[in-house]
Image (cartoon, rainbow, N blue to C red; front, side, top):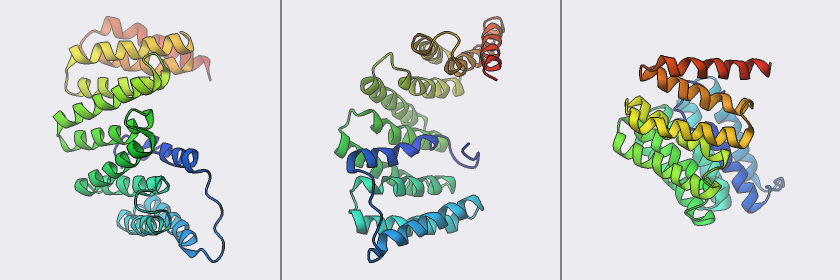
Length: 242
């Protein structure tokens, strides 16, 4: 589980590494003479350790050094540097260095668009993270635009009834609920639930989350009579999987 010390949205950033492998193939083990790659790996391990220990400044320094070595090895616009950019962006945002975090996320977005095309579903990942960055800063107009853009990219990339599209609907719905914009939030929650029910079945574990989200919406809107049966249904689904 991702630490609560960090902004939401980075949990899916592991996609960067998988895309790099899909595009470029798995990286070959470095020969002893190729010291930059070995040194970069050592720095990544150090960054991870310092991050776990709560030393975000030390983790940032190690992550920045690893990125510099990766850029030297693969070039400043190679897809293989995406995971290093992601790590550094996460650390910068955790320290509220928003300007640098935004610049790094925009670099990732540019890499994805150039390599995969602007409509590829993977592009939604950095767009979504930018939305969360703007939301955290209170720039709600830009946050809304980026949440909606992420949703639209995923809808086109996955298709309007694909369950991989559901998290984008929930992101935008949650954004509206936090602003108490019930009119905009409700149809998004309902659509997410319908997609998951149709894709997975009424009693599948994957249906529990959109059920709980819709129930929480109804409770926030003061519609407890509609919320209660959804809570109960979600509880039964989760208990049946224990």
